[in-house]
Image 1: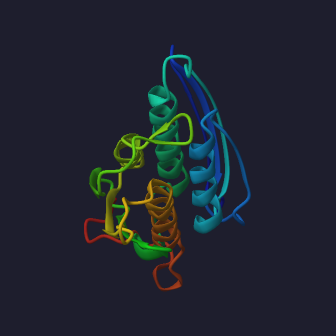
Image 2 (image 1 turned 60 degrees about the vertical axis):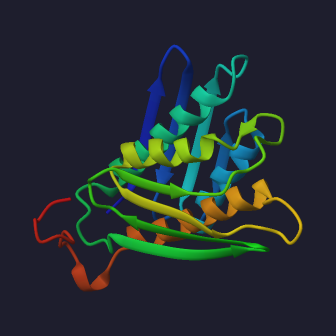
Length: 203
């Protein structure tokens, strides 16, 4: 069974195309106009084991908000579409990922009920010229809403001795942890072939 999706989201502010194959090899073609965001979406593909194409044209002359938000919404919708009725998947996934001084835990339930909990320290306002660190929470909220999942992301450790948290490490570790959790949750469970993993019979 093909677990693929193609989602186009077009507004007066952005034009987004997302294509995904949940059973891919981690290949990615990403272009949003926000360099660090592209780097983070590459993490989702590589560490999730998903083939992923993202092409976004947004109103970056204003700021990065609409571009990042609408990309996250389209990405979440693609995950939801590719999962279909969710029969035979593991449903739950979690990962704890270290990145130098940073430690992040992510937990996912492909529940059909959007709920996001996000906890991170105060970071420098920007990574690179146009990635606002305040958007990371909003990315997860937007993604979780359209993917219809429960997502918890907790930065367990971030401080460097005598210094402030490294924003690059803190955000990248979050994307890697979420990617690994999604990889586990979306995986086919050979013990539950054709069965929706819920006593309700639907997710």
